[in-house]
Length: 165
Image (cartoon, rainbow, N blue to C red; front, side, top):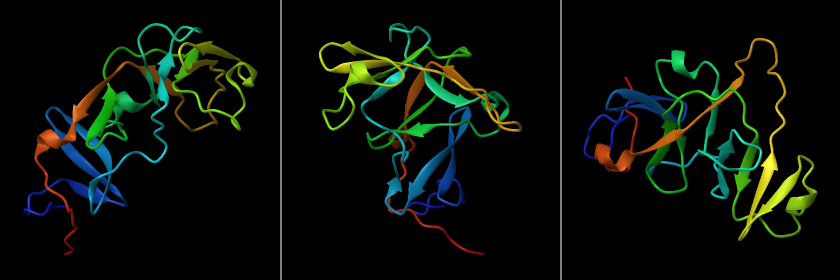
């Protein structure tokens, strides 16, 4: 895949491009307009926590085999060009997740969430995490602190395009 100036962005495969960002390679969702947010990224989601009361270091979930992959997992956010990636020691389990602001009705109120919810002032909800073992043959989930990387620092200029053989 190349940008509008003809600079190679990275190897493209079915809506993802592998970009070289310093010492890491990341698979990033992309279209003609450039890097796009992960479809499931919710700006109200503020992270997982090892504690059950949403305190401590915010964490993100990754496949348990991420450290052995040649291309690191990442999430692009709703902030254009910002990518989150693993950055810290692995935490095996999360005890809670924070949603802030918590959506108003018709969403089930925080205190009535099936996983148990506690209001976090001024407008958040701390929800307990109940994990199930992964299906046979699939990696489980682990959690790590995360860091942000500004994809804009790579200097690519949309629109992007793919050149065929």
